[in-house]
Length: 577
Image 1 (tube, rainbow, N blue to C red):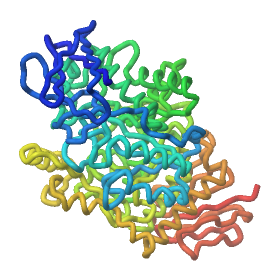
Image 2: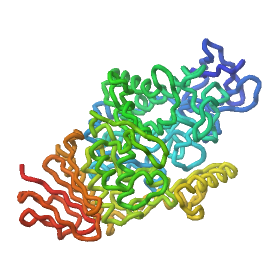
Image 3: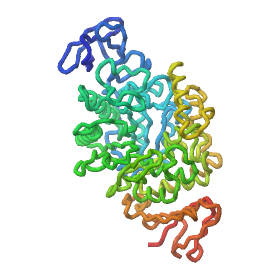
Image 4: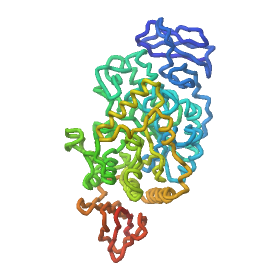
């Protein structure tokens, strides 16, 4: 027996259609409808019909969409999977090394099952948390996943719900926690039928994707319930260890209890029930520490947020790029401030925005921020999907790795960066012809602000764009990729073995720099990191007891308290205690 439950406050009549027969649901209070049907069991396909309309609609809370986002839903039994991770407990986020990956391009096959063969690799690399880009069902076979529409149903081309559970269970067996990227600020344009059921969206607020999600107006209590139930489902039914909330700055909510606070609260309640450790991470460009402050300090008490200011400061300095939002960055002072204070824009004027931006994150530890030199956005939202090694050179990519893995933040890698992958990560979609054309044209207009040639932008609808973005695993045994992989392994091992490098106390981070000399040093406990980005050798005074731990150039050595650092090189020194 299966119980069909649907929130459809607009409807006068609701039917569920199975094998050509329509069964009417009973109307309950507050817009809910329900029907218990003996003949409906695991794997039964069904669609909903509203009033006298013949349009067949998938279930907004469908757990399984084997025929795609426009096809019928299928009954799925969450209790059938046999988990083997009863004793699993995710490690604390402040001790983490996170690895962001996209299931569709992580392997040639692009499936959960295919990704399993690389879990040993991730474990040996030193990864503690695997962060999946969105896996909720989206239109077509391939895409980034940020245009998902069936939020409760894992994408069938990746393997569907059963395969995702197997993937998470296998990750836990390899001592890898799993974080999941979820998108609650909008739904994709194709296959988005929510508005036919109820007031999920409101024209009172506009976002880059159209009408805003209804988080504060009539009916918003059930809309919020829809998204909160989704968040809890991933944690409870799929044993996911944490969520990354996409672009929370797009939430428009003036409620006394903000939507983000509600999610964080409900996740804490689930944590109390299960005894498992969960985390909620926000992506935000607001530079508003309220997201991660405690309730007592007026915050939403999320566990962490992505740190774009650190990324922008680092990449602008290493590449010289000043297009778009990089116009606000590019100095050593910016990078130093990001390392010391997380936010560069903490109430100061932003040229890119033409307004004051942000507020200080005083009192918050660096462990409340994820630091990265690359991620899916910052690579994929370039014209050609270029990685840092393509924009600068391998020497500067090594420098980026050192600063990211010795910074006081939680480090996050993007798939393949650890071996300087030659594969770009480009934007790709699998929409119908008309929507695909609009997406392709819109992407060219979007990048005009960066001064990029529209003709350089790969066609998102081309299968070739997807194939180019897939990792080439045979590279890891070839040079210079093998050397870069060894570099990352040494850095991750050093961080893991060194409490000073995992210490998130920003007050204990000392950064010195010279804009004219183009050098920077950072002190982290007994470790000193020195970077030279000038075109000539730089000289540093260090303690005579300092020893070289890692150096990007074999000629680097300390002689009588003198350190000579070649151009475009970095060194990590350890001072005797």
